[in-house]
Structure formats: structure tokens, C-alpha cells
Image 1 (tube, helix red, strand yellow):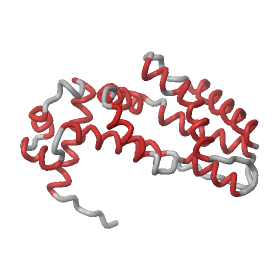
Image 2: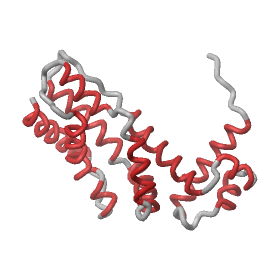
Image 3: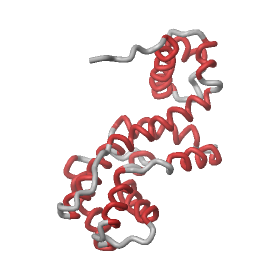
Length: 202
């Protein structure tokens, strides 16, 4: 099996990103200097700035990477031969598993906390993220095209579903530091969300 060898520059960039994830989590973004990142990544400060002109640029990169990792994890697809409730429930359950994980919550809390007072920056990044299709959005589009659900605005319908999910599996953990859902709670939320969605659109 052929593997592409990474360049020295790519390896240094990866080291900087991993150092940022570690130090931001341990000390917070504001308390982590670029000097400290260079030290932890074992690169020069100049190398850090060559890859990320500012600490804000590094935070924005992590936000984009964080989002892409989350949406790429869920590969659930529409199945025209399967019961709608069963397949939608499984896609939602996978989604919950991602956003209600320790890693996701920790990184989200860190980034949201840092960007809380930078509404314009946050809005710009969110708009970029909306350009990528999630598994739930792809499923809604496919089920709509197959005539098994009736949805006038698929983006709005997807947002409704995500609000139902995040209202119990994301925001309470971010804002109130509630515990992560148990496996039974995740399954229950997935089932009830799928039922509610289909009762509106099927």
C-alpha cells in the first residue's frame, strides 16, 4: 500500500494544530500565547506565524475543522426500501453520538466561549459551514425526492430537526454543564425526534 509522505511543513502545521487543541483546552485561548504554542509544538515562533498569522486565524481554522469532522462522521444515507422511522432514527442517533461526545462538547465550549463576543466572526463561520450538507439534510432531500415525505423548505426542516436534537444533546451540556446523555437517553431522543419529524412531514 502506497502512502504519501508528508512534507516537513505539513508535519509542523499538524504539530501546531495539536498543540493548540491541547493548550486551548488546558489553559483557554486567551491564556495561551503563540510563544507557548511554538514551545509545545516544538517549532519556532516564526513557523507558527507562517502557518497562522494570528491566534484568531488558528481558532477559526479549528472551528472549521471541528465542524467538518462532525459532519463527515455521519455517513447515513436514505434507503428507499427501509421503514422511514427506523432509518431516520439511526441517522439521528449517530448525530447525537457525535455532538454529545466529550471531545465535541469540550471543543465547542472552548470555541463558543472565545467567540461569544465576536458575533460577526461567528456568523461568517456559520455561513461557511452551512455550505456543507449534513447526513440529516441529505436524508431529507432524498426522502422528499422519493415522494415519501412532503417538505417545502428542506433547510428549514433540517434546522427544526437539529434544534430538537441540540436542545437536549448539546446546549444543556454547553451552557449548563449538564452531564452527557446516557445511551438509553440518546436512543430515546433519537426515536422521539424521528417520530415528531415524520408526524409533521410524512
